[in-house]
Image (cartoon, rainbow, N blue to C red):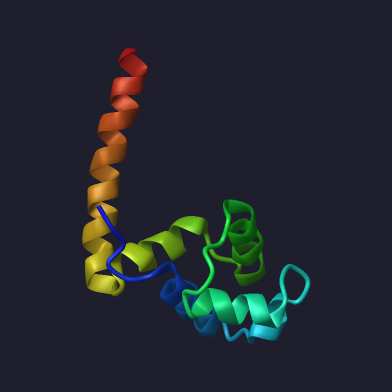
Length: 96
């Protein structure tokens, strides 16, 4: 399964939805990094993403859902799939 939309687009979408400028992330990154990230020129580490999520005050899965789904209709389908998969995985974990 590949992301239908880039993580870069998801970061930019979430940042703008929160009304944040790239400069709002100055405590965790610089403007150049944010610009490069949003233009898909850099691949963030989990540590970098965690810091960004904290500034945006969104759950990490929100960005990943945006990256894989892109819009709310497809996001609903993806979330339904995730619920089903989690139920199966968690049920199997209990039986192990």
